[in-house]
Image 1 (cartoon, rainbow, N blue to C red):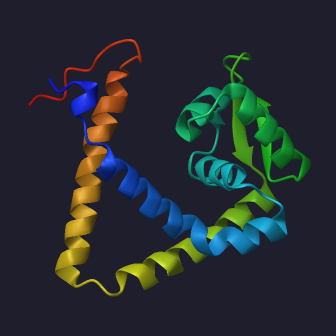
Image 2 (cartoon, rainbow, N blue to C red):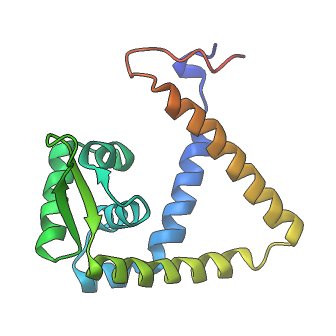
Length: 162
């Protein structure tokens, strides 16, 4: 197993940086006009694609605290973009849904991102596009397995063999 000091995280930071630029680069002006932060836009994207997500799961997906998510959701609720509802089977769980306005905003941003992706990938050959898609799909499948294992931060995963 590789030790933390031996791990090369550059591929993850490069992919994250590239995807962040791809998704948010052209939205900067829109975010300022809408008075939304990148985190709030990310929350809208996650909620719109995972209607009814719990606040806890949302915080985990965004990678921030429940307190920060709650603040952001409060701001988005004031703008009538999302709404919280107590889970009917477990009242301690709070689920988040997009409103009609939130769905419209998501649809608009989704189209912008699709056009940006199409422009970005239009320079690729079909073979290169298929390769990118295949590799990203494979990486997501591996990461989904890891996520299902629900490895706690205290445990050292035995996945990284030399």
